Length: 119
Image (cartoon, rainbow, N blue to C red):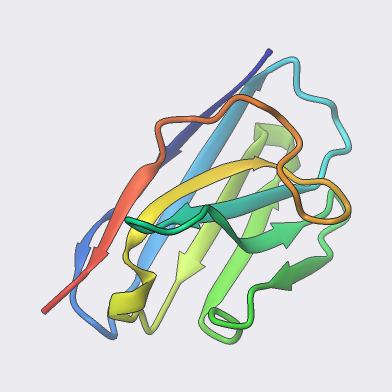
């Protein structure tokens, strides 16, 4: 079983920055793509960014140029640097393994971390 613990969220003004972290533990396959997802109230959970074990990345169009995903394989940790935040980025952010088609790999989710962008 794989466990994810997300952290780093908070309240920030539009234009501000946050850095999220996700620590994965348990029976984590070594070469797994990882991703950040988010879910805003009333919306479906959506992919934000994905990174392969080799460091290749892809992003949702809405965050391209503003967010950067990275990972530390030795620590089983994934990061999301979020700059130029907008009110529409407000959501609970989660991490998970990611399939080639970007669907989440594991059925278990962490508690997520709340990001609120508001003036």
